[in-house]
Image 1 (cartoon, each protein chain N blue to C red):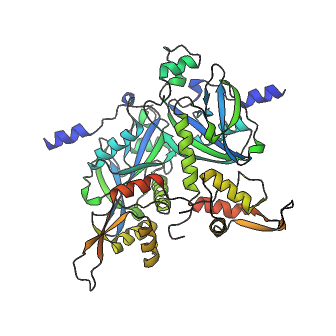
Image 2 (cartoon, rainbow over the protein chains, first blue to last red):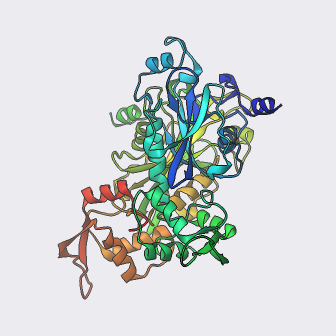
Length: 257
Length: 257
């Protein structure tokens, strides 16, 4: 029964069922053990890894297609998912040519396979709570797992560029928006939040400046509880005020702010 | 001869010459007389206005297609042009239905015209120096002119939403990047730059905070000249240091900055 349910969830590739020439690629970030991770798929033949992709049904909104694809790979609904860039180069084969790629993936190199026609791809990135994800391969792949972002191997197509740009966008977004709601457990300490930001930014931050900046967004609620554990002075626990968090996400911070 | 040159510049619509189901829409901003303006086209029949659009040749990079379309409508090359959002809703007719739109635009409402098939549209916005633009209609339109952004009429398709989001993105971008290189003459005063920012943001800014913030980007060069004119104390002239400006555009500002 379990495998039947899983099979029902997977969208079968059928070129005619989708808007041709348009695809979606997903950069799914998780945070675990002080590391920023990204979810990759392993092609069922050969040694190649790539990002999860999706296609848009003819009567489906693009955002809905992205959410559907994310759910198929992770089991998650309603997480932080947003488009960050559309990739429109005429030739998007980077490490290997189109023909080499087709052969590596088990297709004859000389057929007109819709998968390998020109696609303009909308890149989405997601931030998810690592522990809630059930990584699930699609019909073309036999493994789905997390990789440290700094250990990602050479990927098919332009997928390394996509991860690089998604990470850059995420870092930039931290400069005008709070992020982290979906990457931390419900209650967390200020040092844990700082650690997340340092991991995403790849650099240490000054404790006092960080605290001032992040409290300035007015989206954190300090709880009466303190974190229990070995520390001499136990740090306070915080949680996000979800309504305010979403308002700030929507508005962004102003130039004058 | 002039009309021949103009005709050469215009890309004729031919569904088969372009990547199907993908279009480009351009929100072209200019600044004139203390007003932020946007360039609109008037459909050759009826009373409707819309944004300039473009399509991508099969072997053409998407960014090149956007630059080509911008050049066709304005005569300008190498200006600030960047994608800001991809519009992927299944139904993108807002003020009128698809059939109403086709009839308003002079097509029978019941034919399968490639122009009216589903398109995922990549929205680009451009910032241009108003005085350098030669507004040029395309084959479907008979007028191309500037509108104040706050006087834009109801447009075809979802083009009002596009302008709204482009403006929001522009405002947000001001919070982490300097913008203005393409909207001001080469030399300008600090009050002129502030006026531009206030116009884009739609609100007054504190003079001292503005100056501190904008000089903090380290991309302005203060010239020895002062602006001549009637003022009691003539203000200094500034210009952008283009290399630094482009570096900051590329890097963005960091969370810690």
